[in-house]
Image 1 (tube, helix red, strand yellow):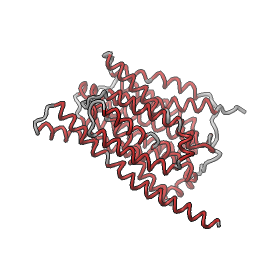
Image 2: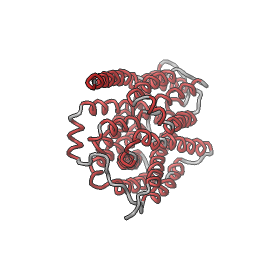
Image 3: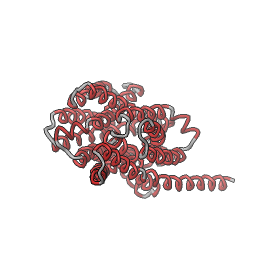
Image 4: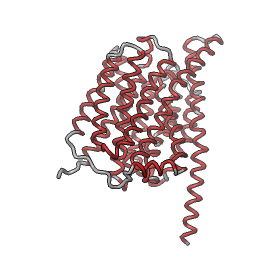
Length: 407
């Protein structure tokens, strides 16, 4: 019987997440080129973006239901094939519809990676889930740093967007090599009966509440980052360097998540993150020049723990929901983000038109549009302050009741 190489599987999972993140960063960096080459408006670019975020939840729903049957190995094969197809078809896209289809396939691959790897890692490291899932998710911001640097340097060198997309084929082949031929673990520490998973998900008010919160945490983080070039392009700071700064800090924060998790409980982390994220987005909506970088640092601290802590919360406090519960949590976040992409693009178009009509120059109008759009996005973490504040009080009251009953 083959021995399960946990370290190799974890490394391969991290590299697959790097590819996922690079698709996000490089797409953010080439939006202007795509708009120019294919004559697309911000709203149309929003629809292209939305395909990545739509493909993701479809994959997580699909993968969540089938994880108990197919297992992580077959899901990762599907992710590998989808990544290859999506990247190659993007390179050879001929216009709006080609970009829609290829971007959807990339999003589907990204979602399949999460559907396979989150429950596999949670099960392999069952006694240390929150820490290991945060270490795994280091490589989402880490991959964004890599992708943003690729977009920055290749863009400045005049290298076209097709080659920037092609670079991502390299880590794709590497993670495929690392995964295949390996023995994968069987689920031993989580509920793998799909019927039980479904029953627990939809009869547990806390799970439904967390799904709602996930739609807001994901849009706060990803909705802002995906439009960084359009929103901050005229604020006096380089958008790709802002993305590198934000995601680099997120990677560092997640890599040291263990001490933070042990010192502060997950709900406390989520509440604090919501407060800081609101402040960060608020500051970005008024900052220009060097102050944009300071506002971006505060934003990064606010969002760095959102995604992995939400996933880990489900695995830790609601294990009966199983792989399906974790997958649908991530899927809900990406689905909500997909719905908001064309809306954010529409905000930019509308606010720019208003600013131009008021007599501003094009550059000033784009800055005003970006700042107004950030004001709108700041509403999401503001709502989360209330939601997680109530959850914090509820769990504190529940803990006090348990102590009283014990005595």
